[in-house]
Length: 484
Ligand code: NAD
Image (spheres, helix red, strand yellow):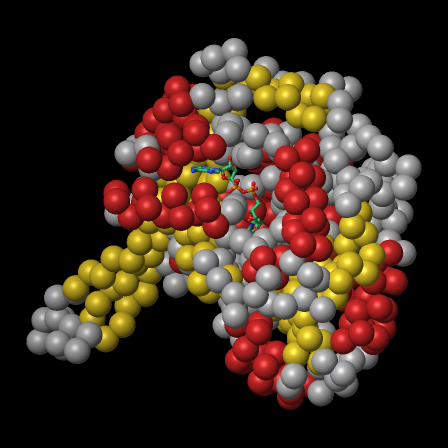
């Protein structure tokens, strides 16, 4: 079955693109073109924003009751649940995540988000009344924010679309989604399911394109809010445009999270945990725990065990269910990771496993060797910059205060973990690290609670009631005092 497409989903209809430009989707494993789809242009974005604007200003969606919108999203959720395996396979095909990870997270987690947001929307205070201080009541309304531009990256493409699309829809917004050029396929299936669920005309459009066209969408005067996930560099640019235009924006950006291993941590649990949350999605994860902080006394032994565990991970064809680490998304990403591996050696870190060169038997495909550095100084660039590949840095600390200081010595503040058998000590560390999310002996994102970053990791929060509120404007209506 071909994955090729020749239309864009604009305003709820499959539409001929404005230009002949094509995006080639290249398999990161075979380096072969697996699909050709239209590359959206500025003119396609203009058409999508015009449709979203009309649907918001004149259409039924923002005027429906929250319950009516919940009913449509509930139907969509059922349709999505039936296609989880297809969605996981599409994502692995286009961006190379191991299929085990795609089946665990790339499609089930977005579906869990839909269900979580449905529950939150049922309880949400869309309109409430509170006593004022002047003797009369005040009605406070959460109204839809307007036309939303949703811009996801390629690494967790459905995960990062759903965290924007679903709360936006439930709030009564209309949405233009711009998938990344590397991963346009999953949103075709998404659009089909939205159409089948009965989302009204104009409410959602999907236009896959590169950065320039993305920037056209961000700056478009018809857009009221930009919801972006991606690199900190792009986030700064987008934030600057939105600041200039006083446009609402939420930014989910990069990370360089620290796992603090306390001396009483259980070794097996910690190694298993770090293999997963340090290297999940082949290390291409914003919340990856890439700095592993270990007390100076235990550093060498722990680093050796970690290196042995990583060296034993299966690297290869992402469609193989046994694969734990697949290829990088693109050659440019492979080169970037290798540049950092070389840099780590130049900076004087000790290479324990991995390094430059291809994993055995993988001469084709954008593979790198899973790498562990030990004896890393937190001021080294490999400890400060986001590599976005399977590279872990083990950093020694003197005591817990020093570990917290090192964890906080970062431009980023997205996630973190602590590994310990003492729950209270773990909670104490969790309180002291300046990040938006934290895990104790685990890192499992819970969609009931806000997710997002401190510092250069972003602005705003996704998930939870806080994540739904980001798609609303607040209006206070001062009610007249009741007649006496
Ligand atoms: P990227 O910033 O290059 O691109 C992300 C998306 O933004 C793509 O759709 C791209 O086309 C678009 N884009 C890029 N520049 C733009 C601009 N100036 N205007 C409008 N659109 C623009 O990031 P990437 O390489 O695709 O993704 C990896 C990055 O995403 C990493 O830094 C990672 O940490 C981050 N990320 C963050 C989270 C989070 O929740 N905080 C989740 C996943 C990924």
